[in-house]
Image 1 (cartoon, rainbow, N blue to C red):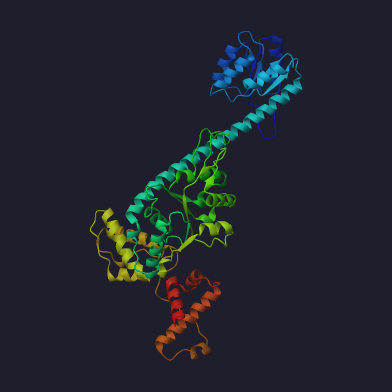
Image 2: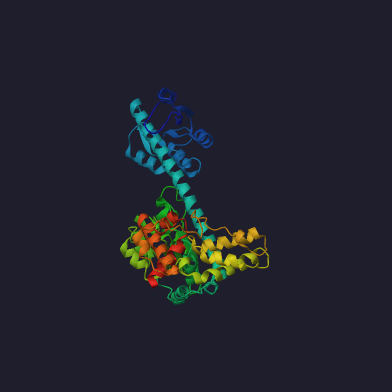
Length: 489
């Protein structure tokens, strides 16, 4: 037997009938169509076979010698292992009362005797296909339910981890020699008390956006409540609603119990939405409504729930360029914090390096070694495309390679982003007119030559600093310094 979409050739059907002629006729018709047949002449044996052999479908006669078919069906539906088996009643007459009782007992359909072979086969095939599709849907939703549970358990663990990190890194742990970062710390102190204001933190990856969010949360009146971090770029679209708003039992096939979403988990505390620009588009208006009304509805629930949750979002890209909803953007950005890249606050590089060195040495039970002058110079000159996170990794790697001894230049590993790090910059060929236009001062001439070369590289790379650095075989911070010097003159 071949059906479009679903292979039913291995389907096992239990026929429950105490009339041999009827039972034999059904058996012959179904076996000829490729089904595997089980038979039972009474309700007791039918229950036993169903429990141990788990048929794919049951044809159940209403009139049986030990109990009627309605009672058999009710008992089947009471047991976990048999309740999902589709039951089709066999009845000698089409009586509305009997039909209604069959449906109330859990039956899906009925076949009137004497039956037509073609009708029986069509109905059986229809209900088998339905059962297979429903079973596949149950398995999918069960897998989704398990994934939701796993992600929410991870969120709870991350919340605990974040608390430990906040105690370790709180606002007092920020290394802030630069005026730009000191100004940001003043903003953080203001936001700690304004605990109902939504905050949008922008900045390149590795600049410390989540650390700022933690400092805002754990320094304010919500510090004893949950801090729930969520990576929006890792949210599957089919899980988005349930993950954020939760669901109640029976909200969808396989939803076997109530489940809290991120808003419920963060009740009274802070929900940190990292990479907010990657949030599924269809979820954005729902988030906006929660922010505006302070209420949300779990999937399948009749009533809305209050949401006393502060939302802090972060993005490493321009949200408006990504097509993010403007109304949600302005609602999130009640207050904005822009984290500068490390190359723009070089005063913080050396104190940060010493801070990380002391931290990792303590974790390794070592006395903090010394950073040589050459190491400090290299660290100060490097561009840090990975920002503070990269500096942290560089220091940790250098400490490991030095085996706890003083750290020298050979212990550093810079340029993991693939850009060559060299102090030599080819100046290229300048035209005679360009050479004649240079200042007679050697220092000024070199500066002007460098600017000519950088401008040419920028033009060739579409004004991409990273592309210009690759063309010139240098690092980006040297280009930034040259450009900054030009702006300051």
